[in-house]
Image (tube, rainbow, N blue to C red; front, side):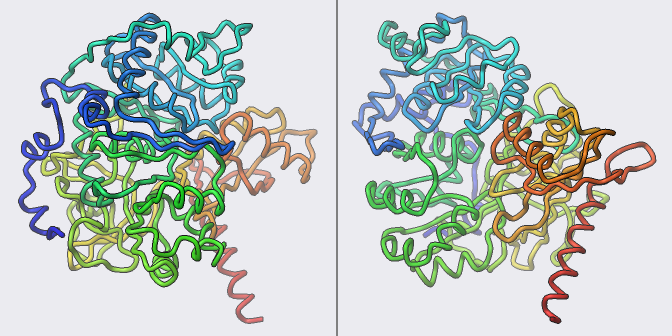
Length: 550
């Protein structure tokens, strides 16, 4: 195993890019990097199992052929380099074909999470200006309520709807499509990240980010040729798209898709069926597996070589359980949609690992802790986690597409997370410094939920916070002011929950709703969510103290 300090000290960006890419930073294509370059080796690219128990494996050469044909389908719909193609697809081979075909044209892939409702989908499609959206029968109905929806290509399309049929168009298309080469600064992904004061914000991911994605897969995940890898994250989100698709495929390594609901039984079955040795996921998923006890540990013990966790801080009890019950090391990793993964306890690099620490900067990044005056802090003082962009050649984030940001101050990118530097150079996570909610591994902007609530005719105002919760990290709680003539009761609360689920997305509904007469605000009228959040924390602490003294 390589020494972390040496790897960080000797990191050389031109060498890293040269080793990572088949092309160059002046002439690059993501489909070539993630597919074509590996097609001649007859390697498996995807192991897949569907919710009905069907399974299949696909080689890079098969994906290359399908991607070339589907690229011509997209080209026939007017898709050109730089255009957006959206995918509202589950974890199937059609998703990978859509992604690779988009990249082949030099176009930009935009993920749409399949739990999104029409409102969330419409905002993202309009903000991106997508020319085409690719979907399947289970998600097609959500597009009916999207105004000015772009051209729809549907897997097993219903002819009566007038959609293009995915398979039919694929089979009829020309089999050859020359990949378009672009600069490493050209975008190949368009992501959306949750904000506190407005709708989800778009950001472009440049092609050169592939070098950074590989660095994470190599140094933190420690993905080895002999590993069978499964990232539980959905490719509708950054961690899944960056590190269940782009990262492993660019290394010529197979990825695993399970298109079915998460459960202990299905997790055990997939690990056994595909002989998974390298697993990645979120603490929420791991806590659910741990709750099953022997039902999970007995069939899995001895199967896994390493396990990685991302999306929220990893609980110490999860680390201990994996060590004691499975005899495997699970490491905590930190990142953002804007950055990818940048701070990790590395499986592939030798360094001290402290319980509760998020770890060390991935080589190619310099991570610091800043005070309120944006001065770097020494060990032992909490402050804002920041990236020194001048000394972080792997940092690719250049701002939100078409929107201003306060995240850049001088040479620093401010993450919005409160951390503390440790004497040995590692960094410990303290908490969020803004209002973004982390629930079951998902980051949810309160503004989106508040907007959905206010659309209901009974609601005048709403404020949404993350309430500390041992199972989900935070659960979404809404404080709602009703209009005259509407009674505050359990029936209305449930109606509002379902309203949000249908308009936004399944994981973003408020599990708790409290009806109030007014909301705390600044003199200028800005919501003071922190007051509501602090009240909830104080109530929880008081309840725990009362329980302890009883």
